[in-house]
Length: 144
Image (cartoon, rainbow, N blue to C red; front, side):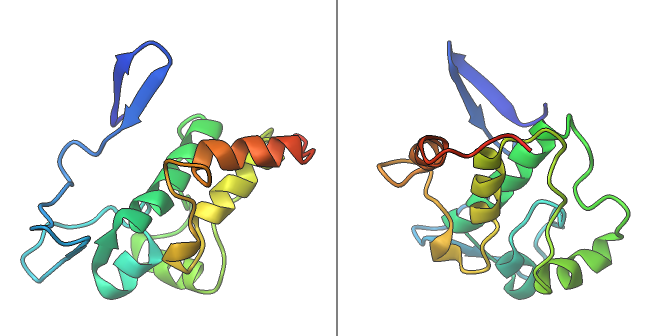
């Protein structure tokens, strides 16, 4: 898997190794005409539409990384050209559910891909992704 760092046992941190940008003290980053190209298959809908990236945009991308893990490295939106992806997700479509992906994980992925950034689960805290997975599991989700 690309873009990961193992810091200690039982811990893995996802990183982009080159796409991070200085936000100059703001909680967002806005691309401009001279900005580097973006990986359209991994970025959030607001980044594709408005050239704005926030921590919530990272949560969308994390959902795609989870999808890659459960598909054993398949290419997101396979069969679509880069210029077709915005129209695909703008109509509410997302990547397909990975074979054998537990309901809990797929539900979390879907939350990560909410159109409204504030509806995406945070990384930490009582409402964070790990807590969300545990709550979904305890609610009785199964494997597809």
